[in-house]
Amino acid sequence: MRPSRTFRHGGIRVEGDFDWEQRGPAQNAFLPNGAVILLKQHSGKQARCVVRRGEYVREGMVIGRADGPFSANVHSSVPGVVRDIRISPLPEGGRAEAVVVALEGAFDRLGRRGERYLWKSMGRNEILSTLRDRGVVDTEAPGLPLFDLLSERQETGILIINAVECEPYLRAEAHLLADKSPELMEGISIIRKILSPKRTVIATTRSEDSSLPPPSDDGPDVELVRLEARYPQDMPRQLLEAVDGSRKFSPDDAVILRPSTVFAAYEAIVLARPMVERYVSVSGGALKRPAVLKVRIGTPIGDLIEECGGFLGPPARLVLGGVLRGHSVHDLDAPITKTTSAVIALDSEEVGSLLRSPCIRCGRCAEVCPERLDPDILFRLVKRGLRLRALELGLGYCTVCGACGYVCPSRVPLVASFAAESHSLGEAPR
Ligand code: SF4
Ligand code: SF4
Image 1 (tube, rainbow, N blue to C red):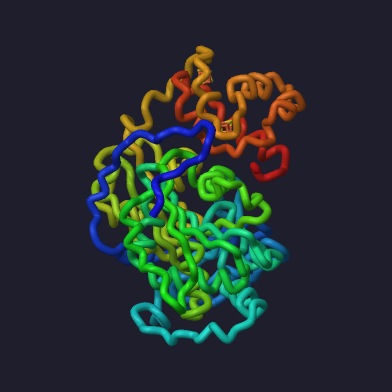
Image 2: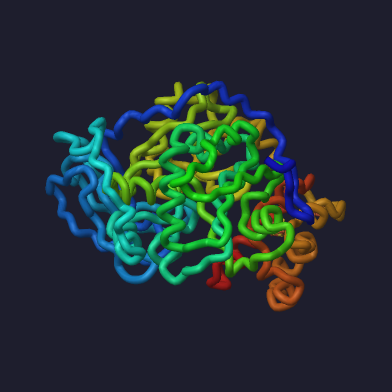
């Protein structure tokens, strides 16, 4: 493996050497007594509910049907009875219908060794429609359905498997890489069959990932590239810049997927299993026993916190996803979705002083911005309602990565303001 590489401009090293005591594979989390399964866990319209209150559902049965482009099928993660269908808040804001399934009856798949499907005879279109039927979405928010993400991409330049975790509380992708490397290699072969990429790379920041199995004659031709754990190394532009130093491939010529997405594709195609489970890091200084768990979609986060020994004291902040780009939650009933990589309970020391003070013009935010923006100036323009001027100065290129807010000594709400602007502009941050 070549020495660590990274992107050129800005970036930060996120402080905190979180002590992951867990050794060995991720354990299955306890099954939820009541799974709260959101019908919107993907980028498009919420899925159309196809079950009724009181109906019995099997594990893996469709409970929500995709409703148009970028929508995805949603399956029941547990067998049981539909106890309620209600409107629930989404972690990223907004609301959607959720089906509450009370655990009951027998599991069709749990603990059973399923048949392996001999997928190599499947055509590209058959693989894509199977991924669509089984509700497989990109595990990175906003959860683009894999069918929509990959179907127009043929003869891709580069496929990057993004195992980069450059924050101390995130560990789920690394665990997956260690636990399931043969399955991931097969998943990569499936994705390669769809995309026919010229180059395939697994990008990682951890030395232990070099224990991945070497490419075999009948396996995919994959390079392992170690990158520096500098934030936001996991974001698309910074990842491509570090992996493809010669700038051979443009962003339009690259497909970037998390190992967890590839694993979901493997399970859908090889084991005929819909997307009903994912690896989740449950961590933070306010938690007794941090762990990476295999969790059923719809499990309330309170169940996971209890399974990790509960809180050491009242948490100062609960976050879903990483501390820099994640969403704060206030409700322990909030459920795990297909795009929830982590549940983080921070103590007051980790959160630091929340008191804001005026900007001291120290310039640190501009130094670390990987998009070469001046967050301090953009913030002042946005605050004064001068959005057009802010756009002229590059606001539209802000990826809401959070690096500027992380280093700001005055805790100026830079990122919240840029996130609100990109939301009201009606476009995803580029
Ligand atoms: S949030 Fe936007 S302005 Fe701040 S560092 Fe990231 S890209 Fe730059
Ligand atoms: S880092 Fe904070 S205090 Fe420093 S210039 Fe930027 S906004 Fe102002």
